[in-house]
Length: 90
Image (cartoon, rainbow, N blue to C red; front, side, top):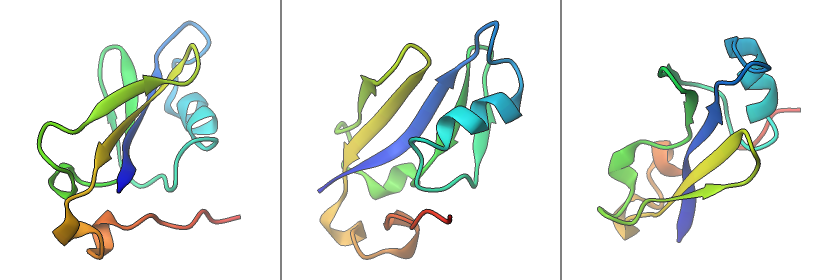
């Protein structure tokens, strides 16, 4: 089973603040609970790395500003609470 690991929003002249990145990321994330800021992007983690099969992570660019990292979930982690997809809150 494939799942989202991270949503990456690139920093640009129009996206410099965390609030700007969160607004864009909301279209793609299952939840906003942790973010890491690098010199080039905001990274919104969806599931911990240990949920995924080693070497299975792939990045897909979905727009000029957004990329999504997907990976294959480990069979033993599919039911683990931190690895499950969280429902979006309206």
